[in-house]
Length: 244
Ligand SMILES: C[S@@+](CC[C@H](N)C(=O)[O-])C[C@H]1O[C@@H](n2cnc3c(N)ncnc32)[C@H](O)[C@@H]1O
Image 1: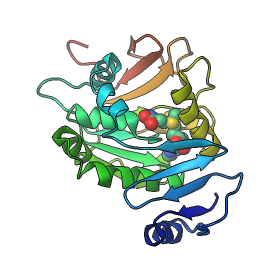
Image 2 (image 1 turned 90 degrees about the vertical axis):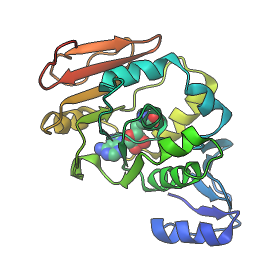
Image 3 (image 1 turned 30 degrees about the vertical axis):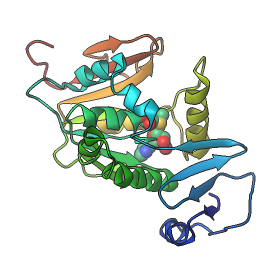
């Protein structure tokens, strides 16, 4: 990457320094740019713009989506149980936000520095949102920049993995975001390496998001799977618990 363009020069310069990227307020290139405004920021390339806003109309709408319930059940959310989750594939933090909104504390780890910066910025914005639920959820989210395989899991009892997967039929908006993540992602082995690493960690469960018809990631058989219309969550439980 790729210049940081400044709509808000001071904030853009600070981001450029933190990310050791060239700051360039004028240049427009074919490369991916991180554009930093006063109260927002986004990634842009060739007409493709991707921002993270946890209190956007789309995200507020998504709070009530059926897939959230599946994701919550996959990580083991119950009325009186809100597992601490290590999201090893932070991305745009959508799934992490859903989990935080369900009451989980979530540490997101993202290997692409500019994305990790964008996540951190989005969480800080969400912490002062006018929507109380968004503020509360953002207060349960923490970002780490770097390779998940090199991080300490702290008190996390669940590892969540949502690896890149070749895009098929998807809504235009989702496709745009997936394309941006594909551009940015340094390595993409489809999640095999993360799964190997996760399998060696002392957590209660690993949850892997897959397209509904995709094969299971890794060698192990999933303890159980929860399928929606287009997405499936494969759950690998360390010690199967009653009722699961
Ligand atoms: C499909 S996206 C995840 C989307 C995310 N679940 C969301 O809701 O926005 C996968 C992301 O994982 C990141 N990633 C892949 N391997 C990683 C690793 N070993 N450590 C940290 N991040 C990783 C990629 O850079 C990419 O941004």
